[in-house]
Length: 253
Image 1 (tube, rainbow, N blue to C red):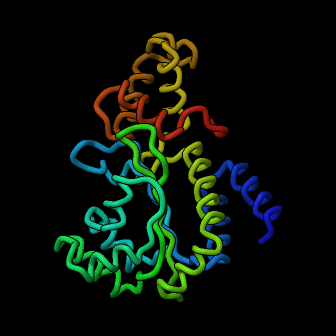
Image 2 (tube, one colour; image 1 turned 135 degrees about the horizontal axis):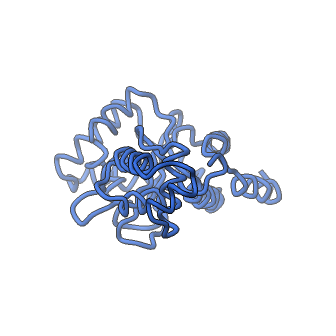
């Protein structure tokens, strides 16, 4: 792909308004450049002791369920060496570094368990990219892997095209940050968003009821359902989480 073709693709990525289309374009482009397995993860809810609730993270992947169920739902990712590296660092890392640490006995048992699981799944050749963070509560990264190449071949691809691959990943990431998401049943309904938006603008429940032509009891119900959908206790927390997940002011609102 020439530089002008890359520029056009970057513009295409930046212009996406829906996650699905962007993710498909990114998968296709990465596959054309030797990486057919992707896992993107982003959270704005880290704490000092954990990476936050998985249900509040945005996770996109094309790995099969045989991998994602134990890795994600089973919680193995917490001990994945690449994830641990990404949560503390910014930049890129070849999986060959992890392989060397494993061979030298520098990884703790819980991390070695993940390394062995990856080997059984054929996930052995790739790179990790950790994106810059503006807050200690955020963490964003993408793992790109090849199911048909070894690490030496992947390193050769990176030596030739790594800068371009990293740039594409960064543009995709920045676009994803601007798009709404709500996973695991945490997406707000149109009415819940509308009520939260009005409260966020400083309106009282009585004001919202007047604007929408509903009674205050109905407004209270929508706020309660919004809090439940976002798994928070207060309306202020609901407004914060909905804002961080870009669920406000959507085109379908």
